[in-house]
Length: 372
Ligand SMILES: *Cc1c(COP(=O)(O)O)cnc(C)c1O
Image 1 (spheres, rainbow, N blue to C red):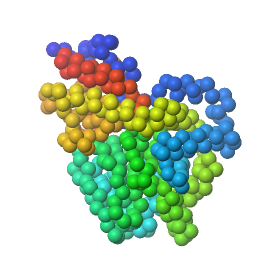
Image 2: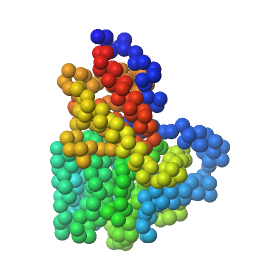
Image 3: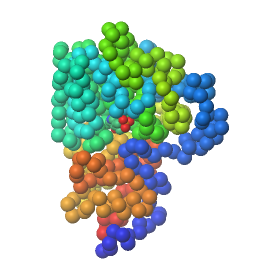
Image 4: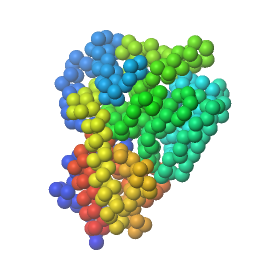
């Protein structure tokens, strides 16, 4: 038995890369090297000129092919991240009333946005306890369904399936996009930010929009609904079609993002990227199932996220002590989501994370618990 401060995890057990955070998340060295190589002609140059615009075009084309978007779908982007996109969606994607599946911190936040919007009716909010997800209810009185592909705060994923009727399906895929399989015919707007599966930095949003979503944006804009320009999806649509953003984007973010999309596409696309996360998840949950001190927080195996794993610890093992020992060894950000308040670790398994490093992490945790 040793004190946590004196524990030294054997070097050969440790993951080669210790970044397991749920966002910002691991950026691969090859992405950083590619940025450094292009830096002199790219960083510090105008986002209205060909060099940067062609990078934005590469991102839009790359996402179209990664997600096999059907004819007519468009890739929009703008500044402000996914949180900003909720505000934008409340202006230009919800016509009158939305339905929200609320099962954690992020999904509840979008519901709060539409509930507070004076130009919208009160939303229908279907909630479930953390650790599971509710089911969508098709309704005639809503014109948009707000789903979340992966609830990052609790480690719950849900399949994306279009309900009957013609409400738009708006999916927060901030942590799911690129790491989970999805059929684009099941959504109208699949939005995310690049600091998770796309191994880039925050501050940008991207939205894959169906023709029906584009039509809704144009119709609401034409109706004259007042919208702050920063949240105006018609402005974003017009700029995106020119491979630009309304205001200045972070150029390094665009470059890192483009590299990751290319890496996915060159290696087989979404089946490659989602396959890496699925492999990592298999390793993590098999370890937790076999462990006598750890178990998956999410009871239903179908709801257990393949991209963000939440693992509860037995009361006699303090997960925060384990996280701090790991942190001292450069194994970072395994702490649980702050507001969930459980004795658990949360481990991101984005495609950039090497499945072998997840196995090494499990071995390291076993060693720490065995030696505490
Ligand atoms: C991280 C995250 C967000 C917030 O993203 P920002 O880019 O920080 O605004 C929203 N939804 C989900 C599901 C997330 O994982």
